[in-house]
Image (tube, rainbow, N blue to C red; front, side):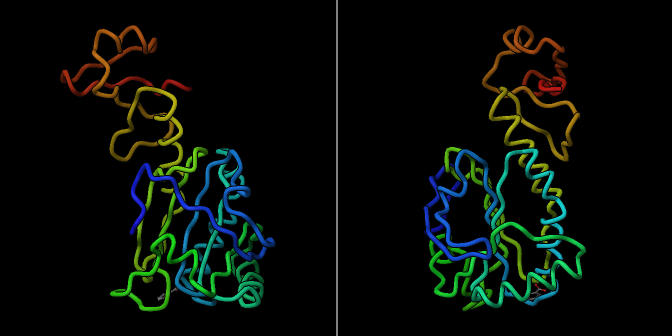
Length: 211
Ligand code: BEZ
């Protein structure tokens, strides 16, 4: 069965380019991004892993550990990693999971047989420090993901976990945020010292509280 938001994600052990690991132990208290790609030595995947490596500091700033996975063997990952580093001018140092037996792919429902019988689709899971699923997206093989969007969502998840706010469409760091419906306007005015802009009783904005 597929994972749903709020579910505790399953643990696993796997061989990776950074050694054998236990997923939960590897994550520790950090947030996690686990993302699958269809196969090694493919062009879109090469750019995705390169972009992720180049965003290393952005993920680290947000206390996020990243892991990629495909159903190719470790030796193939190692050779491909050199190509990624060379062609994308990066240094991939996050684990690439070798999931030849499809153990993790099946556990996380990453194979969608009507898309491909044997390869993983582009699944991406954001996992909180509580090991619960906070977001999942699925892209087809032909479309590379936007890792700036992944960072934007992490910013929203981390902000909304801490404050009684939600982030509006196309929100970016620094933009005003929305007061959640569960808070009355009277309470919101007391709670958000930077002010509350009431557009409608159900649509209330406040400046981003953690800036
Ligand atoms: C790619 O990663 O480039 C790719 C993989 C499978 C199908 C199409 C593109």
